[in-house]
Length: 344
Image (cartoon, rainbow, N blue to C red; front, top):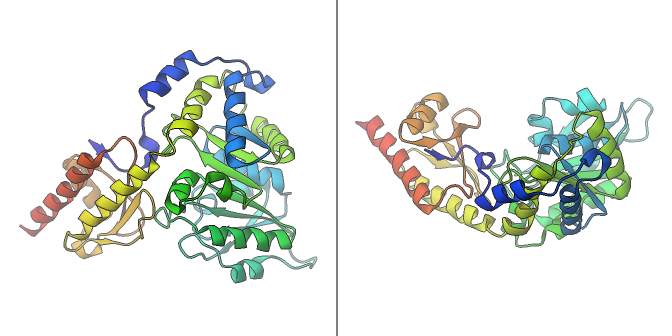
């Protein structure tokens, strides 16, 4: 079965499995797990931040960033299709007690003008705007890489108003590869940044939250409050070190495979690739086929291919290191076969 549902389905490499077995461990809640400490120090250095925290998931990293930089009753500004707003169960309201204000972006980019308009003025009737959150790459925009210049404008506009910025960088290494710039350059345009280790970077679990030493100290306490303080977590941190040292450069291969997949799908009558395919995600519109997402996905599965629905008549394919060029060719052939069956 060729699994293109998500890059979260990646399996740890043989080297990662061995590293987990050999990991030197201690009690991380006491700060005594040497492997976790090495991972956090490595991540902070790569991202150009004072400190970093190993957390259970990207969602937890995002929530800790909000909890550590806001107060109940504040308002945070989010791009309208961002992961924090769309896919995290309303957690910023449930946990941090903040309300959300969304602005419509363009492939994840937020215009300086719309951001300025969304920032609350000094009026006792208004909540205080305390945080701006955005996402790079942007999942719902089809893995779009937000340009560096837009990141700078977001940060400077917020900073001029005395507002902190959190970057949901779950796939930030994909953005760095697509934009051909360093990871620390991207991370420099935010106060806190989260990076997922368990997507294209291949770890079995975990994410990183990085920022100032003060914010990470607060986040560590919030992690404990939320039950995220793990003990001998070095077993999970060990593959994370390999993710950051050995898995980042190969992301370009995933991007090339996504481009190859998109090119093949464009040749199939009635299918429309609707995203720019900046990174490892391909979105297709199947509305011309007069079928449903559920039926199309079932047909794909019958041909040995897994994908996911991504809105009405939209299907998402995601490339990753567990699929190679041969698998992508088989995926294109499978979709072609379904089309021929439909037309018969």
